[in-house]
Image (cartoon, rainbow, N blue to C red; front, side, top):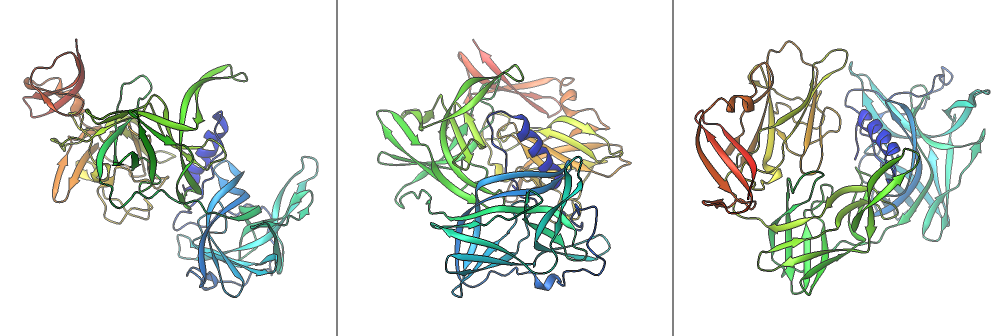
Length: 553
């Protein structure tokens, strides 16, 4: 995903510590109202400028044939830890081929979202990018506008003893040349001071390098197609759940499942590619989905998505004396199909992967179980559970909390209709876009799966943990509330106080029980529960409700 700089740094740090997982390719979207960090400690000569303004940036789609290609590249990016380096063998990239031989590249840098086009020109088996070209602008807090250009940059040693140095922009006009190799365009690498020359993002006002850079670029055709169900197929809403560590099935998401004779189709399983379908085959009471099914491209996430089956295997990392479970991809994923109960169950692992050359998991479901979604009888979501809270001090404050899309009686709620609110001194907190990027001004309700990867976000598939960072002070109470919104009907949870009041969950224990209701794991009311696992819904005299998972023996 395109994220802000702190999350980018966290992702790189995490990727470096996890075994058997490839490094993530994450594109950065700069904060509104802040200028990009300039990496170089020395500036170009005072009279040297790139003569561009924001009007020189090409943001409108050029005329020509628009295509999706696969881009491979090495890149630099900026994080809270400094300049980070990475590479990818295949990222989705939009290009336009003009009738005049022009070749336009959208978002030309791998790790920053410029929302602009970079022009190249094709002549025979050679393609040339003439630089500099203006590609990005932003505005600082006092309204001053800054323009940034793509320019060829070279490396200079600043400390011969430690071999440390930085990249500096080349003055004047420069070129990057690509040769046609088969059906691909391959960048021809030049070196200076034993380092490759790179296409860098440079400040137009003083020539300072801003860290974001690409080199060793290759643009190749991409021709894989998506699965499309037949028009005659009728799909139903099912629930998809998975086993979590040290828990039974907890949480679920709504998916679409359709049968067309012996062909079985499924969609809604991926957070990044929610409309994608995969196709399997029904035979002898089993449904098998072949691996390596292409499910979509997301340029914001720098990802081609694929479905894979997998298994969990124990592995040992000698360096850390660590035994852990790792996902190993397999040729397919097979489910046992119970036609009477309308269930699909597997002992394998359902994997949505980034790319098809190494394991990089986007979504995963261990021992997945699917069943037809029953009628939802209770739309009140779970109370949020506070996991961590810190007051603003030298750094902004934060609150982390969890709630899933399972209601009090174990039924699955539509995640697209779930929201949460924050109350400050018992008044709803109002969000504004200048502090919370991606949020409309005057917003009080945050969608269940909204993230700007900086001040608001979440992680987890089922037991979803949400976080919010804030800078306000002087409050006496801070509370959270979840709600389900279905048109004009709103179903709120109780207020859960983080600061300043007794937590609602604690006050329940001091109320008298007025009634008990029993539900099976499909959400059906049960009058006389027999042996099995149930949700017991306890009603108290103060009107509050508490639900607990109970095993009847």
